[in-house]
Amino acid sequence: MTPERARRLPWTGPEGKPCYVLGDGTGPLSRVADQIEAVQLGLARNLVTHALGTLDDPEVEYADLQTLAAHLTEALHDALLIAAGRGTRLRP
Image (cartoon, rainbow, N blue to C red; front, side, top):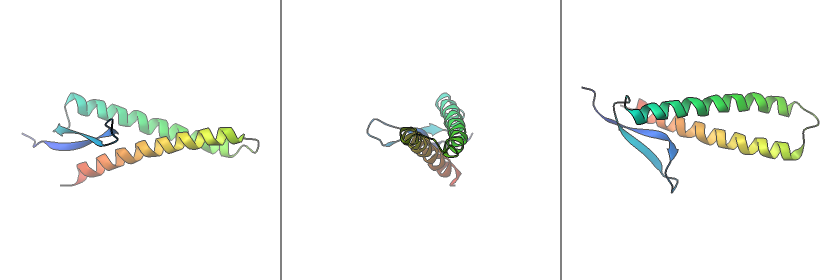
């Protein structure tokens, strides 16, 4: 039997505090977390591609850059939550 470990989830609670689940990583909440992480990282990947194109446009509007910066900030926040969770899982 695999010992239970605390996994940091890729979202926060209502007060902005980290959320955790106990288990061996195979339960339904862990699978949902895996799916959310995959979606978040996929969206971040697509956003970086979009950002590269936008930044190459010499006629890009300031409002578009503000929107892009907001979306990139959100994607980075999500990626950092995922990295923190994975880092926790790697520790013995």
